[in-house]
Length: 295
Image (cartoon, rainbow, N blue to C red; front, side):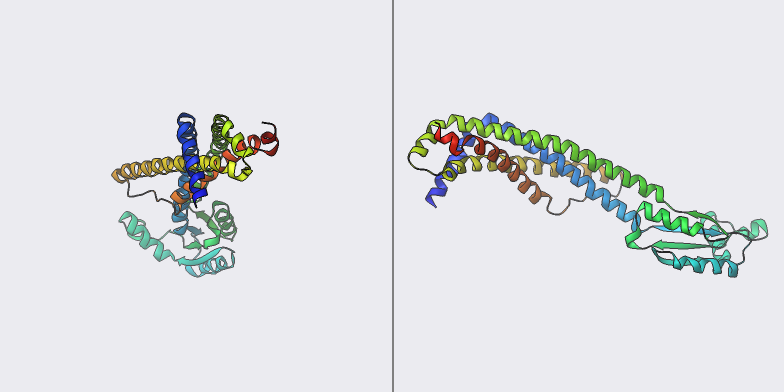
């Protein structure tokens, strides 16, 4: 326990000694995590919004107006054979007239003296088929049924959402990857400065018989703390941005951006991993048996 306390203290002293480079590493780690965290936040909420639209998704089919209800119903029964159809509802000509009256406040028979509205059908798509491409395929099969004159659905809206979701995810990954490499490089350089500053102490410990692991551990702790503090900054920034955006949204629309589960925990773990990887990159190169043996 005393040995670990000593090593942890050395790691903290190393972090404090190189304050400015360490602060640069922390802010770079924070920036990297903000980019990744924001991309994940956008992705999860776009996905949630898309699923909400898809859960209410339906396709409307309209048959030839010259068909009577019985003839249209014969066509309607073929909808159940289409893969991906969860449920169907037949809309008779009389039901279509009722819907027209509810929408426009006029009785089509009173206005025109007859009912020219076609019979139709309402189709709800099964859960596993609620993507733009699959819904489009179902609509094409519905339209291929004889005497079907039109099929309408909001597929383009889902397609647009999916397109923006993919773009946001790709942009976040590209920017995050570039920043990630810069972060590892900066943490590595900061640890390298600490190694140079303590090279006499490292030589002394080596001559006294200290193991490589004993010499390396303070620098790993240093890098881990840089990652942890950077992650705390990133989590505070993302949660603050989230609160501000929700406050603005609540003034105009009844919608809140939901914080994904384990977001804060994931940021803290990712930050510490970045710090460990960056520090290990330096100590592997500058505290190796060859380097120690040539001092």
